[in-house]
Length: 162
Image 1 (cartoon, rainbow, N blue to C red):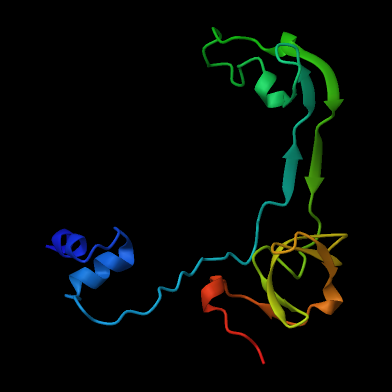
Image 2: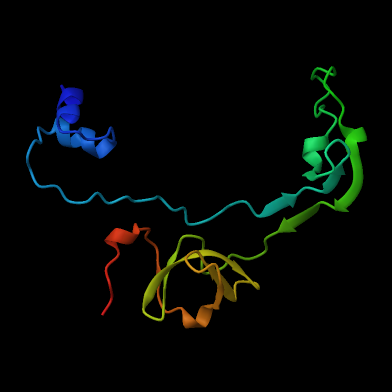
């Protein structure tokens, strides 16, 4: 029943179109759908590992060390896997661990206001003193940013501020 109604109305298969058809909707006016993305307050991953990079002897390209492993991480695994350690040529960069010691005020996907525009935070750097914005890809100082919003709205639902 729902599928036939949806096809008759020429609507694509989505959750909100299905709900419209289940509710018996045919000719009612519809508003634009609001998409809400859940954002966690904390990233509990305090440590990140960046793998070493090597030159692959087979292709001559720069690859991560994980791609050129010996194929055996645990003793109880099958040992008939190709050993790619000999394909490692020159070490381009060594692996490193990055341990986060503090939480920054601005987190990714936060909405901030800059010069009257509502922009999205991509990340922070310089110990949280500067933020990188998704729309511009550039860095701005935090004291310029006035308001921090904890919601994620699509661009078509964001209201213009006076």
